[in-house]
Image 1 (cartoon, rainbow, N blue to C red):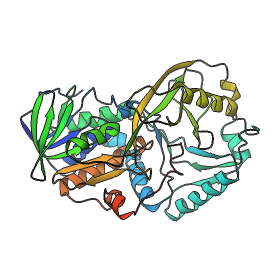
Image 2: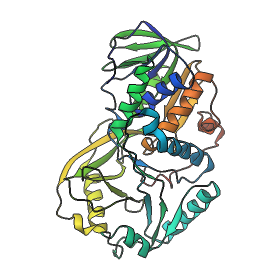
Image 3: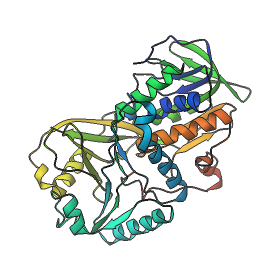
Image 4: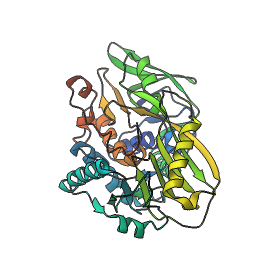
Amino acid sequence: MWRSPEPKKSYDIIIIGGGGHGLGTAYYLAKEHKLKNIAVIEKGWLGSGNTGRNTTIIRSNYLWNESVYLYDHALKIWENLSNELNYNVMFSQRGVLNLAHNEHDVKEIKRRMSANRLNGIDSKWINTQEIKKLVPIMNTDNLRYPVLGASYQPRGGVARHDAVAWGFAMRADEMGVDIIQNCEVKNIITKSGKVTGVETDKGIISGEKVGVVASGHSSILAKTAGIKLPLQSRPLQALVSEPIKPVINTVVMSNAVHAYVSQSDKGELVIGAGTDGYNSFTQRGGYDVIEDTVRAIVELYPIFGKMKMLRQWGGIVDICPDASPIISKCEINGLYFNCGWGTGGFKATPGSANVFAYTIANDDPHPINAPFNLNRFVTGKLIDEHGAAAVAH
């Protein structure tokens, strides 16, 4: 599907990380900015990090203006991405529900919906009866988690995570981007305040510009360049059930319950929760989170009680103090970071890649990602999206 070249001695631009964000960045650098001599370096196989280890939910109903502009930019690209890449990413706009289980949930969700409407986002309130009609299998009268209503974004949905990586990889490869797999970057090399390349297990590769899109390991790579990023890396767990016939045709999320569910095209229930409560680089996580998640899911959907779990996994998410990402250049000339997405990285993939490519190409941020700079942790102008993240960080 794409070439597997040996790395050249030097490139104009090196992207560290072969997930959706990294491959998409290389694609837009080549397509929109007509740049050549680009490499994507991935320590494993394409999509072996968080791109292949998430629950594929896509939405843009965040609270603050800055976040809405970023995530809706991504959603608009999602809507035409299969055509653009000439590859079916299986984007399905089946809608996303955010449940309210108590008075605080109701007020917080309605506040966010009002902000959404001011920004032209298709977010609306639906009552318990409408939820029951949309998701008949839900136990809305649950004594522990009564369902009082929900926000609903019809344009939201899911996509095939692997297909996104493959689509970007094929099109980038066609435009001459070198995609180098099984090549781990050990150090970012700098000299006199400027990036000069990277040290890998296949040798030193020179580069005039380096973009780091390494999800949970971004802070480790940043340290090699003398930069301390304000990130915590934690496992984010998910699981899928055995496949069954279609029973749920939307995505249902619950912040209070810390569990969300959708159904894949293969019939599996795709179930996720909040992050583990400790920093770790494991791709498994603790079983207590799975137990709590399954307990909540079974209470909301009693029909799932006798189903078997097919497999479970964890991704390593990097979380900023304000639950918003970093898409920014830094004090070292030619070094750029795209990280800190927490649990929201997949939904932003094409939009993030698009504005990050602009930032690298122009050495200046796109207006959409300008607020997501590193300097906000100095000025205090944070973009606090913990409430709209929909899962516990």
